[in-house]
Length: 295
Image (cartoon, rainbow, N blue to C red; front, side, top):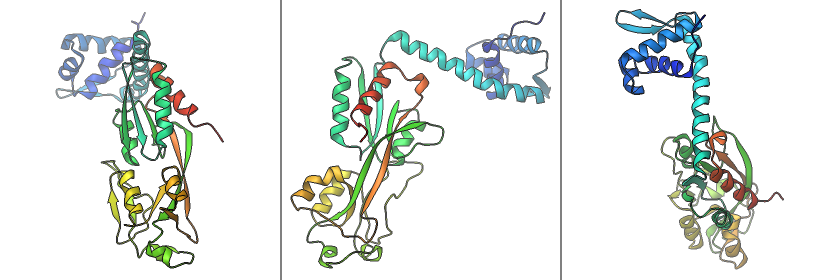
């Protein structure tokens, strides 16, 4: 009768491969070399196939070992995920939830969501990361954020549409573009300074919305862009909810573009890992969804 195969034995085999041998695996797993070696031998005996073979002093995977190791990684990862999820549930609500948010998400909705969340728990802290474009998705890739509101769903993640933000091209009423007193083309815009908010990502930055204007000014905060446009220092596409009062009282005017005067950008709610998300992260996600009811 073959010995029983265990997940721990698969972990030992993975460690041998990932750390270049039994000594490295033993150190990574905090076990003795003999324990790791014995575990791998028991695994081979249980499966009835040879998984490793010696090349000089190195243990390398056989063809069968490569195939079975590849399949085993998913099983081990899922088992570890179950253990982590159980640990979270056993402890109750998480002590902290980290939320990465695109700066264009309406601040009033964000604060309403956090206020509603605070009434559900008085112990969970919220770490809020306000970011731009790829800076938001990088928080997911880096494992920093538990939850993100992002302009696109990055590869390897799933997300739900949360809110559509409308951007409108605006400038000060006395800006030279308004003095033309006609419909404006892209060529007209390129002759004037455009204000753009810098992508806060470090790996793959994007120039979303830039028209190629030679006089582009790039700022780090949306509020800086708004204030600069109010002062007549350039034009920009700004979220309508951020400039509604400025449009109403005449401090800003929409640019009469032939096309593209209004843009719509979908924002998505994305879990770092929905299956591993604790009750606090799920509750915060629920508060965010309720703050953005469907039209």
